[in-house]
Length: 226
Image (cartoon, rainbow, N blue to C red; front, top):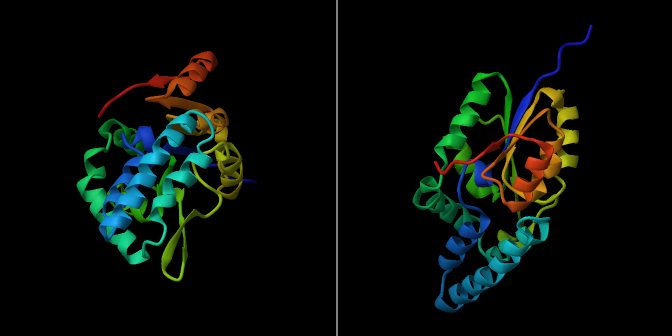
């Protein structure tokens, strides 16, 4: 006799739990670089990557994420950890969406496994996880380091693109989840595959691509600012 499968609630952090994304973090980090020349170089790089990220934002965001994180190149791991803590306390704490946190709290209370997916780097998102005690699993991007310094590259797989659907299938198998009883909340076009594989999808503060698709699929829509 087999035991009943479990259910989960998947939350995309950007747009559902926080109102800002990786470009905000990239700008902050670039602005904290040591030395005027280095600061100007990396800040300019971050600014230049913004249009690329915006252009790709409603489609596959993998390339956009790779470009956005180039500004971390040659920063020491210790420095990134310190700046990540400052960013969470000084910037990101003001961008938390209380309505999203309430959705997460309710999912936990209803007995679902709570999983958060984020384009943010682990150094930042681990700090938030400490504050959000409802999270069972955090899946986020990770910087590549060599010799104690960031290379400016992300370790594969890069979170943010269309791989979300494929990842979800594998995750469900590993954790014995019944996706037909599971929920997912997301804001961006590339999350369509993620949403389409659960029994209870919900488009939250959706971009144009996801809003259009959600209406066509008759998925629930939620809009909130806090």
